[in-house]
Image 1 (spheres, rainbow, N blue to C red):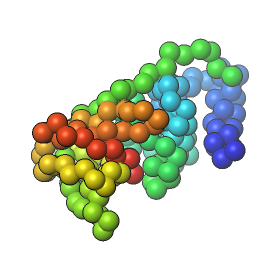
Image 2: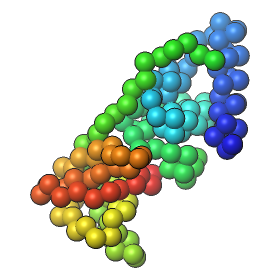
Image 3: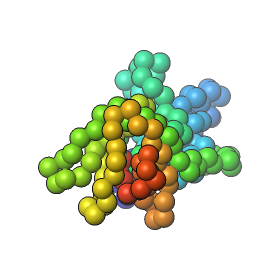
Length: 160
């Protein structure tokens, strides 16, 4: 129900702009191309916040890469259309810029693109260091898998 309530203002704004013949902001077109519902809604929420703040050019507009693994929880810490081909990234790659162990022993990794991911598997020990190149792959049932330089992997969740 929260998802529907969050989407209504965006849909009303888009339909009003379309009816008035005004161009739809580019960041909304990017959001419409995302295939996963949670990522698409999170993208709309971020784009709407940028428009409301009047800083659409000052902050990074949503893209498929920066919405990878996003959900409403991820973005809340910051804050009837024609058929569109939906985009779904299967994986992203990046370099580790920050690495720390949380109190429960899990690893939290910050990537060079600003995303922060937290380990979910307690029984997997990864070999990670700052500067390492890693890959995060979309796995089954909405989970994500981070693979280290040795080929070992663990489930991770995006937290920012």
